Length: 60
Image (cartoon, rainbow, N blue to C red):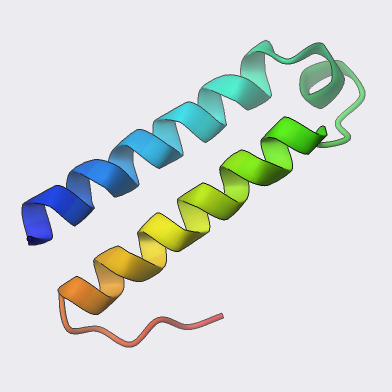
């Protein structure tokens, strides 16, 4: 399970970072668009799931 959560975490991080570099609003205006906010939420959830599956306590 840890490998799955690690893969999900890496995929979510990569997708979020790629969006920030490719989205005109996020890159030029430095204001996160709605898609970036959604992708960040997905990344944070994946990070939390990964920490839980590895036995660590998620911190805010």
